[in-house]
Image (cartoon, rainbow, N blue to C red; front, side):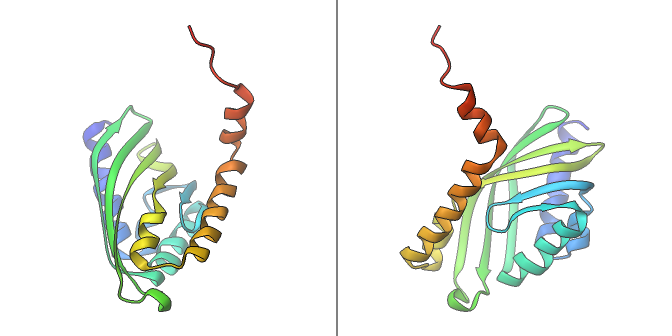
Length: 165
């Protein structure tokens, strides 16, 4: 896969996410792919990824729009910045519009995504929704736990600070 094909994969990926069709969205992934979602957590395999997109995300969001910009790709790993927006359908926040930006990392194998990670400032989304500070804190604590418990974070701390040259 070259840069142009990666950019097209991202375009199709976001169109599929917007559609709400979980099976269509999951078709962009390998059978054993892992999707790390900043709200719903990790999902492994096409069935779980389809469920997350169709039955969780689109349950909570309407009028979804997602666009990727400035993709970079080295043949295996790619990154892109994105903007996305939706209208909440969660009863406590029904009808409230949200716009967020984020960074996405893709590991690609044979033209399909084998791993997806995103970094999004969910606090910006919660502020737009009007989430109570106590509830935000509870979510932030969960996200902190996810970050601290990742193997990559443990490896990072185990290496110690780099020596100055």
